[in-house]
Image (cartoon, rainbow, N blue to C red; front, top):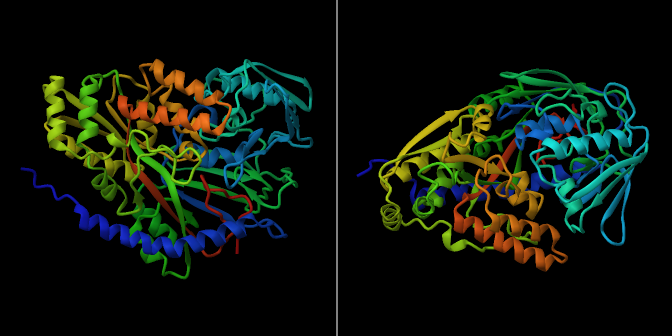
Length: 530
């Protein structure tokens, strides 16, 4: 019998009570921060050198070529998008001045904002937009441009996209920022993935990258804020770079981030553990920021590598897991359990496949392993030491699976190395992750990485691929929602992904940081130090 102490319902209830108390206070703080952050930034000169304690180091800084928030935190200060999302995830114009769609839904015409300059001094034209879209279509990890028949730049301020057939979700897809269609200079068109020059049109420009230490950005003095907006609007809006420079320091250890925040060595940190947040909420020098439904916590399942190439083995794993235990250990109570691949309250929230979620039946799991003919073949888990919630979840899942008789090996890497291993078909059976941005921006992005051809879904599922096409082309919300329900059910039925629960995020900043408004990444435009 295992001597491992399981957290149990009492532990989980205690942790969640602590989280509920902190959330009640934090929601008010978050609301005030959002209101203040969306207001017009104060007038005055530029000031300050801000250091952000970032949870993980990026593998690359090319926004076309990764889904990692560690990259997006940095890259979206340097690069901008043609169309993007506001605070409520509605589509808004970014580098586009305006846009029109033909009556038949096939032709999208964008007028490009004039007077926008790249960090090297060149003025943005539609040729840059075309080149960026072409590069994204060639190697970007997203498939938002799959329905495109042709793209052209007929004049310097006009960019045109023609579709093969109407796709009602097309604007939502190209404005999604899980894998953003960042606009680069035209001469970057043929650069391979991860090999771009860090030259964009954003409010901050690239200075240096020390892979094991930090990335430093500085204010772009020729940046012209978008006057159409009063302040923050998601990844768009009116952006003013008040700070002289921002350093993204990679600090995977929570204790180190917290200590640096308390001493003033850093001014903002991400991923604050619940116990520390409860204590710091009483510190007058620090503000705690609560972000509900931050990411969907789970693990990819490799359906091509033994033993998880056998559906019965995958079903046994799915059937065995106690998701309450996984999430309690991974988050200390900052979580919710629900089966959806969208968050409750979203127009696409469905519970299809719920019969496969949090089954927690070890006896049935052992029967399924016996039916599968499982004979102790090693199950390889890849997790990382950078995101502690992923690491802790992997430790608990590994132990739960050992208890049903599986042979489990857990390989732990830093985030960059783990991300590189994701694309190796023979390296893993379960790969631990968190879907934050993808889940937030809508149904297509929420399941995009489960549709072929994706680098982490090595075996195509024709049923799922067909359903995904239906989702993109559904004419009404009701049609698309019904299709999304079928997609979610298929993912559960084929065990292509193991969902554990919804993780809730806590961040913190020092009181001298003004205008910081938490979002799907840390934004340091419209932020000042006082």
